[in-house]
Length: 306
Image 1 (cartoon, rainbow, N blue to C red):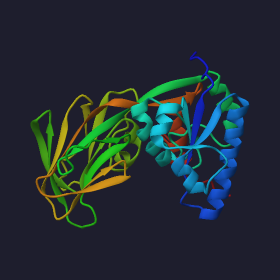
Image 2: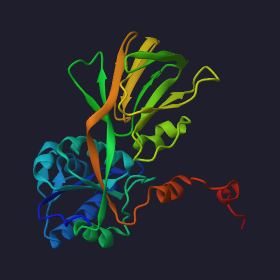
Image 3: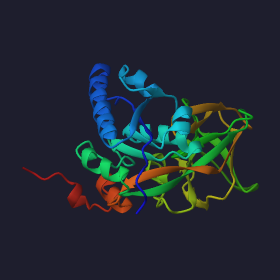
């Protein structure tokens, strides 16, 4: 069993749900931040609030830290929100090696293990060492028209047609060798984490988190023979726009860049990764069944008549 987390600053990050009004969300999240902060303080830790979170909920009585300060000072980050919130925070903390615990305050909560009804029981136990650590891979993306910068994705990188109705022509090279070209709405390159997100909706396969691979899933390809493919994650993937009225590269659905004909996106596994802490009873396949209805039969999915 891992050792207990030694007394240290612990960051809390939150984001209001888009389903709620700003006033309702802020009031509810402030209450949850206070409750988690009290739990941390009672366990001997020093709770802090991520700076953007303080802005989102209208401030709190906790000291605030920017992401880089959390990376330098905190031994753990607790994220209260949905999967998108966890991905955003975890991706930014990955370079610092800070582990992350997710508390679901969104809709699906595929990555956020703790529920609002179980956090008071499970979080103290996890702080005491009753947790399982899992490493999740990231994609490192370099965009040809954005030189000198690198971008990281925990879920996926998509190159698609943007806001136009026209298809895009794309060329895929693997390890500097031409692999295939096609016309489609776009393509999604996903990590195992992202294989249950946008890629899944495009018909891509589910990859267990421990599989060292990426998926390439075409989006509405204009060829019946075009199918998703799985490649080793030590591959260098280059996506080149050969023809498009408009094309966009999107990182985890959070950031996007406009691409012109001839622009390319180079993808490879990042040297850094995300550290996720799960409760001891965490089971990936149970999560698939419970959250996604995986293996459910049509009879089970049909609402019962009353």
